[in-house]
Length: 72
Image 1 (cartoon, rainbow, N blue to C red):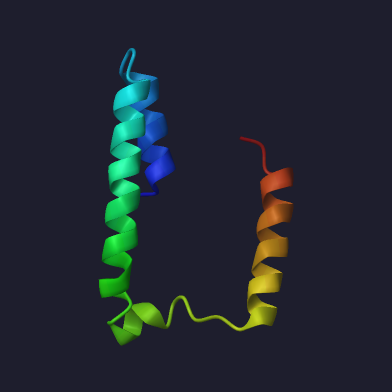
Image 2 (image 1 turned 30 degrees about the vertical axis):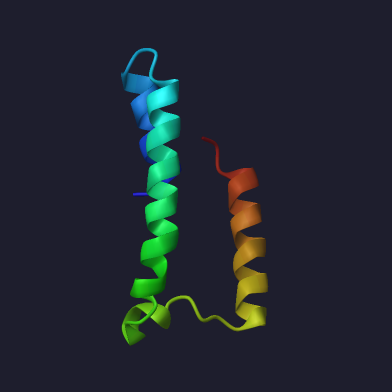
């Protein structure tokens, strides 16, 4: 689950928890940055993140369109 969703759920369901969610989000971000290097050592996982520039361009365009059209 993305860190931002976890932080949002904490702030929604716990009263006066903005500081707690911010600290937890910062810690999880640091853990993700440090742990990301270890994950990239596995070939199956690293292949998920090595995309061609054309594929990235299309993915960003599709994401931008869906983010603007799909209501939240």
